[in-house]
Image (tube, rainbow, N blue to C red):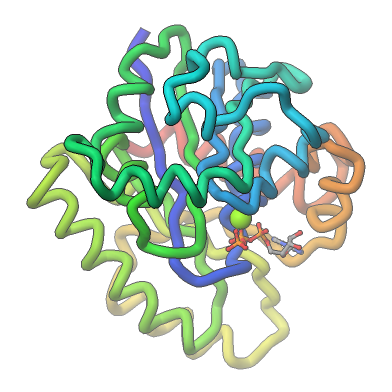
Length: 249
Ligand SMILES: Nc1ncnc2c1ncn2[C@@H]1O[C@H](COP(=O)(O)OP(=O)(O)OP(=O)(O)O)[C@@H](O)[C@H]1O
Ligand SMILES: [Mg+2]
């Protein structure tokens, strides 16, 4: 089985990376795909949002060589999760002096079999952990809010992807940009929409993720929005995104 590894990145905080990783992952699983989520963020929001609060084994243990990745993976409602933890901060520091510091995650994921998709929830920085994610990935998915300040950041992200592609991972490509927390009543959005159309049109997914309170509520119940409320806009939008995601190459 060919596995596609996708990094969900945006160096700006709170732009919907974790929400997108969980709910796109859950939507892909509902479409019959086997999906593994990697919580590479020391904040461990993804693990927490899926009800994994005190995992016996986390990615930090795997990076540290105390545990095998396979034994760390947990199943939650049909989704597979490799939990993160705050100790990933220490991992990052210790990686700096490591010989293959950029390729650690790539080596770990190379041993994992049986998944259609591996989605990596990255921290809000272009740190060594994120570089590891990009070096290990086939594709990049960028959740983007329609705000002027995020446009400058977008250029930076695309630049970083290009640099990693040149230096570490020639196969890396941008899968797409997904507009999240979309509110079509806000005038600003139209201006930005025009900007995106002119500059990165080919990357933008048709399916947008609307602002929807169910998306913010679901983590308190340890569920994806699709398991929490399948009739919500959040569930519909992420299912639509998943269908588009599997159809574009
Ligand atoms: N479409 C949406 N509608 C409403 N709330 C949303 C939506 N998407 C995300 N949120 C909420 O916005 C907040 C930030 O989202 P999220 O945690 O996914 O961002 P992030 O990029 O992972 O943040 P960080 O950079 O800290 O890792 C969360 O409280 C989340 O529940
Ligand atoms: Mg996050």
